[in-house]
Image (cartoon, rainbow, N blue to C red; front, side):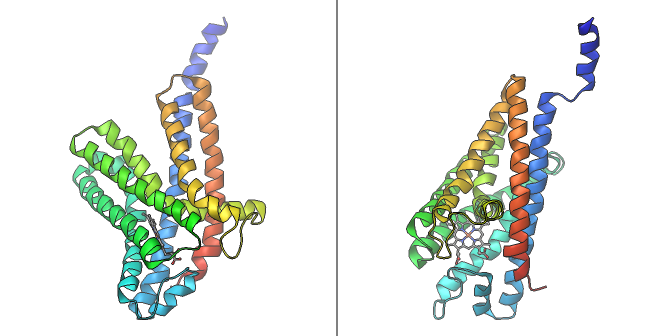
Length: 275
Ligand code: HEM
């Protein structure tokens, strides 16, 4: 008898696979809103100051370096890095939308080429800003962001190669990894603010050399990469408990991401907008 009633109940209920995918979609919606908040910060903070010729006012956003007198090349490298960062942050979200890939494949290909080129430019430019221009709070934190930059180059290569060879499943997996590592600097801000709100700033120093300041640049790309791999494994797995456990994990990540975004918007981004 229990089987007779259990079967329709199973059909009516939401399957573990759907719950897992739903948790992924929820995280993506929060992240997409957060990436666009970051874009609006970049445009709102840097475009008016740049167009007004007030380059020294870039530094009002709390940069380590930024505008430096008599360093035209460094200043140009800095502002092109920042303005192109708005493009990757906006485009990454668009690229991962299934509807764009299905309905506008040519648009997906063109944005994809531009996204990969700009991501490579940002990674190489960022590494040069750190090690050639010398923009770093300390070597350990700088090394963390540098590793993220190198991972961008690796993930960009695989994403492009699999796309060109029409290995679509591998291309999709590498594109998600690329999205995560390109979002590494965004994750740093989100993680930093979530941690600051949750702990009152434990391990953070004004000089940016506390244990949290050094660990966050590493964890900001390592944790999302590991969570992404676990999510992919759970999607492929047949285990119900694994799928449900990972869905729960993703919901926790949604909460942390939303908390960090709230903090970043209130404390880092909105106070610097010029419009
Ligand atoms: C690929 C995605 C990236 C995005 C979206 C991005 C975004 C940004 C933004 C918005 C700024 C201005 C700082 C601010 O106003 O908060 C910035 C500065 C900077 N970025 Fe990136 N960046 C990316 C990649 C990288 C990488 C891979 C590195 C290093 C390997 C890097 C190194 C730097 C450095 C050194 C600065 C100057 C920071 C300062 O003067 O305080 N960036 N980036």
